[in-house]
Structure formats: structure tokens, C-alpha cells
Length: 153
Image (cartoon, rainbow, N blue to C red; front, side, top):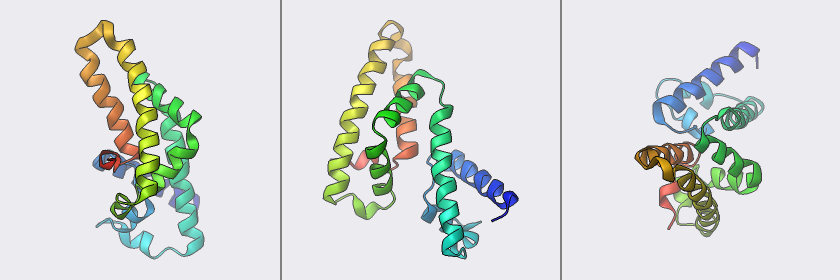
């Protein structure tokens, strides 16, 4: 794959993330009405390259966070990267919601994020008027990476 194509794919991923408020999975790109056909026709080698671009995009996105809530999410990723990637993979398909791994790992992620939410809430107690917005922004990040997060039972 040429460098220009890679840059265009990165731009498509970024545009998708902004438009849908979630980082796409490969299948999201392949099912997109405008540019899906490009991804559908990729051979295995190039599909793997796109998967690697998505992986790098996620890591770059997490590294770029500079707000308190972003820093806490980055801490979650740094400390719990294994469950991050497991749960991210399980968020790829709605069919996974009823499966035991989704619920088990989802509960683990949820518990861990509640801990970080507590840290965030504690830091915001002296600025209560901003607490709702801050927590909403934190969970916007969570849903960007885990679009099925709300399906944890």
C-alpha cells in the first residue's frame, strides 16, 4: 500500500470517528455507503495493513488526550491494555452482547472505569457546576472506543 493511500485511510478513519463519535472497526469501514467498496475489495495483506492503521490510530488518539478525563482514560489503557483490547474486539459485533466473554470482560472494564470516574469526581467536587459535563466527556471517550459499553448487564 502506498503512503498516499495510508494517509487517505487515516483521514477516512478520522472523519468516521468525528461523524459517528466512535472509532470504526474494519467492518464499519467496509460497510460504509461512500467508501466501503474500497475496503471490501482489499486482499488479506492490505486488510491487515488497515487493521494495523486502526490499531495505531487508537493508540495515537489515546496518547493525544490532554484533559483530566483523557488522562484518566489513558491511565486505564496503560494499566489495563489487555482488557481494553479484548473488550474493544468484543464491541465489534452486537451478537457478542449476550456472550459470556462480553459480559465478563465488560464488567471488569466497567468496574475499572468506575474507579477512574471516582477519581475524576473527587477532583471535581470543588467545581460541582462542571461535574456533569466532565463526566459526560469522560463517557464520550469510553463510547468512542467501546460503542457497546451501555450493553453491559
